[in-house]
Image 1: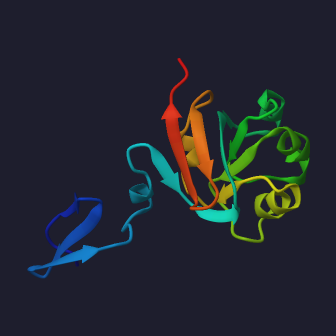
Image 2 (image 1 turned 90 degrees about the vertical axis):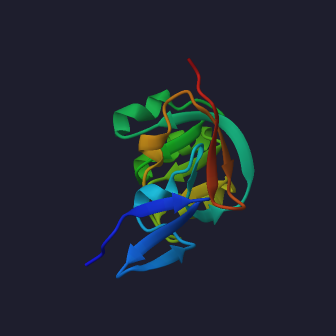
Image 3 (image 1 turned 90 degrees about the horizontal axis):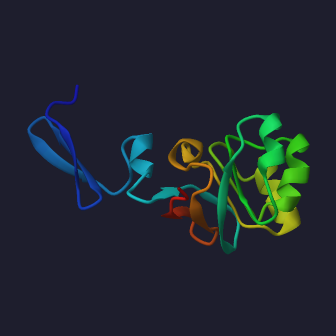
Length: 145
């Protein structure tokens, strides 16, 4: 069992275990993937673009996606294609390199970051964000009030 407490020091996770102090370069928990203003995931399609976040949790939310928006969703389905055509980039909570969002992003040549775990919780509709598909980072620029 782990003893002691877990702390973050300069974006490094440290653990005290058995009286010894250990430092980890990688996050220990999924919540460590969120920093002050960004979420990390896997690169599915390279490219960098800014746009307005649109959170899509249900098929009924697809009509809210406008031309140039950034589609943020737990995962995409074939029924999302019309909204994906309008969106400038895609961000998903789930998925790997062969998931629907990744395949469609490569076909459409639109930036895509997948497997963020929590983008739909971190971002809000109307946030101005930057999708950096070259590094697998989605960054909040400002909140729309």
